[in-house]
Length: 431
Length: 161
Image 1 (cartoon, each protein chain N blue to C red):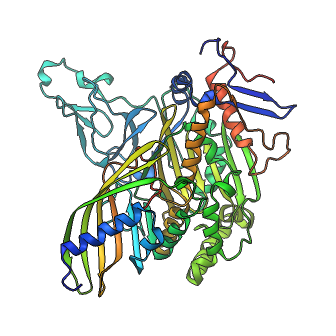
Image 2: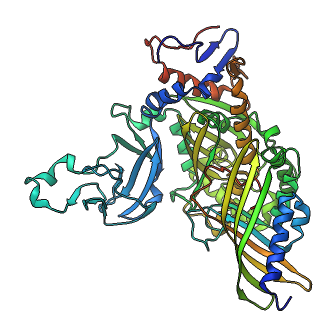
Image 3: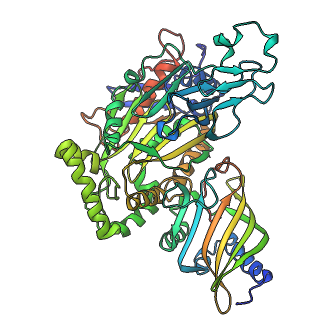
């Protein structure tokens, strides 16, 4: 970015409790272009969950930050993330969404690769020098970095990025709390929600960790919830706090009136459900002790991992990642995650819970999308009405779940990556 | 309706489409049986996938379908306030099987939805199980199989498909 920007990206003054975000950040094509390089090329990005590739030879093709990735489990059982492009002349090698294959053949000239990306054969081998197949450059190229934490697989296009476990910072412990729901491992449930919102991707980051909007944006959902839970003994957001987890990650942790398959019963689930949820809860206490079991079972977590991964441990367990396609358009992929040892009853109620609130056909997500799209429309005025305010709860010793600390954590990291000191561009400046 | 023919089925489905286009949702709801289901699977699932073990976009029993209608008629259903304008075309109606008290029907749909200056197209196949009643039909199951991949760029299913 050059130095001749009309205004800073952020306006921050802790003493005056001012934290403002320039609306230009949501609309400017220059910002959009710079984000590709400064954010998406320099972060760890979620690729997929290990459970999606249970057997050797399983593969998935997936787009991450504009790159076609071939995600495989090779014949030895090792997970691989390959750039889905033929080393010969560039064609996409694998053109299927998912499947199981011993090898992949590029249909253009017929080169064949193993699930590890190694060149196996190519037509007209005699015309190539001896040892051609042994060259690294003859193989499908792996992504620059590929690391896994508790079956969450991430890639990075920055070969010098810090190790994933360091990058996750405080988010690591929250992933542990979520994964500790079971010791049988977790799996992604079949069925991918693939949708889009006509809004800037950062609006979804904010929305995913926004405990402030629920009462008004999701009024209709809470109307329905009232009727299925009888009473709201656990009020929305009970004892809830927001945390800055470092490196741009953030989380809300709070109590809520909805049922949780692990493990908070509601009357709507009947007596059968009561004993099942009781059994799951008792198991948690036996494995983790009362205090941690209570946290796992009865607290809700909206976990954000910079820059574009959300793991919601709420009325269901969701994994959601999203990518900007234009300043005002993003695509979103969302999945349901569930313990492997869950009963058919619990799985059914989990999915039922998921769909009631979440996803593009649920009773809440469409209203979120509407809100974000109307922010984007509001930003048509960004040349005159310059600033968003995310100062709620600034200066508090402990931010509540409906304060905006989480968003400030995101934007601070965003700003740090977009305008690294001592570059002459925009910095966060005092008012 | 024991001799239900395609013209009668078409009349029923065209009427359903008209009720939805006119936002007469409470009236539309009366077309369903008490044990009805309305489902929209994700587009990477097989057509006969079960919502008990797979993630769908929508898997409503009759109770939740009622909640869906109630919700959509409120001003606080923001995604549909003000109501979008829709136009549904239903075609290729076929009766595939006849059972004692119901018939299996498929139709192809194209639904245009306009709101705030943006028009989206939804398309695909609807699979119905229609219960036979003395004077007409009731929908026991409506499964909407979306064409295309995912929900892009339409983004959401805030209307009834």
